[in-house]
Length: 445
Image 1 (cartoon, rainbow, N blue to C red):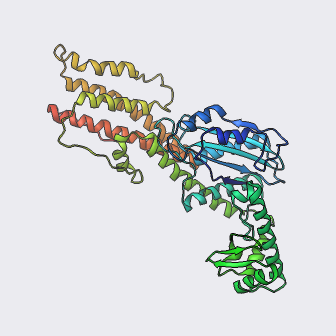
Image 2 (image 1 turned 45 degrees about the vertical axis):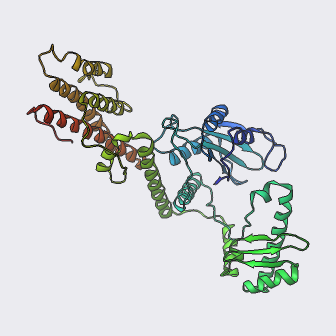
Image 3 (image 1 turned 90 degrees about the horizontal axis):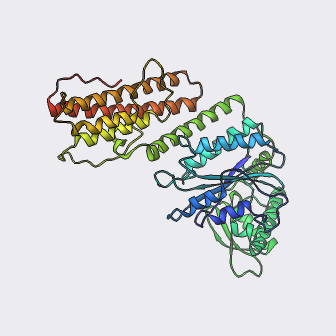
């Protein structure tokens, strides 16, 4: 099994979905087996992609299996779930849109499309950002998944020819594809015969035996002009590099075709590496899409990896009622997002009742026995109690969690709740200072 990402993403939503569900494959041939939607809604994916105003609107690719690899239907669904949990950690189906379609011709392929936009914030969302670290992330997922399924590891063949989309998908390009394959096979045969020992020998072989003129020599490529051709073509790959060790490359190519598996120590190290990638991606997703902007500076105090810059005006006057309403609402939403059902021993007031009490503080300021600041503190204390309860529950679950990914998720939830508590305590201190109250302020736990 291997994961491939396609060079696409700038068209409208109809283009990738039409290819995934169409009866014609990339070579223009009719599919022997009709595509099948495994997960997602094609129309919803089209609408999600077409709503994006940026240049790059989606990421598409496929999870491809060898001819000898025959995953069951339940295994395919499990792989899809693992794929989403791995590359979209911390998020749910409410945050992103994706489509998975099964193709079964010669081998089994699960094609996917992800819209490049987080659905709630409308911010840019990309499961495959640029960078070497992201490539390692996908490679680690492939290694761990192959080992779990009992499949041999995918070992890159250094002599495998790399073709462009033009050469693979167009009638004109297929001629270039055939020529490249012919040139490489001739070179490999000459290396086996001992006729090519260095790059100069290779260029000489191309010129004298194949009639191919070398027009340019780059660090990792050769530009050549075929007999009768008007333009030069570029040959890329390890075989054409200036420091290529031909005998070593051939030995590696032969070894890549032999089944190889990870031993227990290698698998454990790869699993740890993958968990580290997932945790880093989860932290990024939580900060980018789930953390309200005004609270990111508190996230920086608790977790240095969640950093942001927030502009504030220290001289601006604060409306404590408005600020308090917002803080309580944010805290209650965070607390009740994944909280357990309330226990019979302690019944907390619901959000509607709490916010109703808060809204009436200023309206009844002249006809009540308590001063507004005291009422503000009462509402804050009720919210703090509920947030603390949820935090203690999350800490208990985190301490008992055996799965590293689940433990990391619960740890991040504890961090979120601590952020809410910091916000609530800060507002309580501000009210006490403003009204000169001598009520003791509890310390964050």
